[in-house]
Amino acid sequence: MSNKTINNRAWWLVTPVVLLVAFNALIPLMTVVNYSVQETFGDNVFFWEGVRWFEEVLHSERFHASLLRQLSFTGIILLIEIPLGVAIALTMPKKGVWVSVCLVLMALPLLIPWNVVGAMWNIFALPEIGLLGKMINGLGIDYNFTRQPLAAWFTTILMDVWHWTSLVTLLAYAGLCSIPEAYYQAARIDGASRWAVFRFIQLPKMKRVLTIAILLRFMDSFMIYTEPFVLTGGGPGNSTTFLSIDLVKIALGQFDLGPAAAMSLIYFLIILVLSWIFYTLMMRNEEQ
Amino acid sequence: MGLSWMAWTWPTVAFFIFIALAITTMGIWEKFSPGGNPRRGVLGLDTTRGDRLFISILGSAFIHLAWLGVMGTPLWGALIISIAYFIAVFKWV
Image (tube, rainbow over all chains, first blue to last red):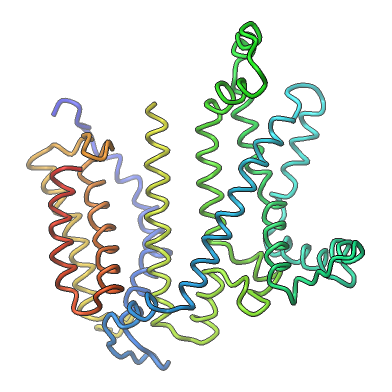
């Protein structure tokens, strides 16, 4: 082949990364695969169980429920954060001193550690002492996120929107800034409406960064653990027990290593296939 | 050490040997019969041989899970479907 790489020796330079990944990802993953087909009662003694745990997880109502909760959560936050982030980016100034002010303000939530975000929102939303909780109750709405599933969901989603919309905004803003002024001038000459400018100039130009934003937000929210764990601890009941929280409950709470391993492999496969789809779509966008 | 290290079992050892062999075979195949450059398949995707291996293995995992969820054990049916899927992916995707 004429277009084949002639010298492949550069591949040796990735050896350190391969070794590192082998130790922190590959070997633990292999151990999880081994656990997933066995039962243990501790003491490093294992009994062969075959695919029983996989069958159990696939038929487990508990797994279906947390998967459904996870998908709903991810779907809802994507539906809110993406349009909201784009809308905020559209209203941000393009030049002047306010640009830096806006950018710093937008970046602030992103700098806060996840467990701190959870703790902050926990106190903020407490019905007796928290500013948000007290205010909502003051309006005459009965709100207690530690007791009502709906209020817990509302608080979790609000927290995630507060924490991560900025990321979408910053990415969308970067996309908007890359549009040359000439496009807008052409649109003005044609007498294009505000909507037409958005639909045919701004949106196509933001397509690539928005794909990245959706991918990042999808991945992060699908693996979300710390924030809801600190905020609600998965409760009330199981109402905000997302996949990762459920997984930790099974693996470390109940110490059911076999079922937890099977569940994490299924979780891993779901993430892998969805990421592959997103990645493929992104690469196709790149070509166009 | 033996099999107790990392809680190994023979079936899981065989599984990982299969994955390692598949990757090695890809290397040998490319060495003796180059042609792993991207091509456009029926899905409209540009895939290399490596991509097709990935799609095959990932797809087989889901075929096995689906079989296990719907039909239960034994998994021979899933294996046969997976082999057919493997061949189809390498031929047309």
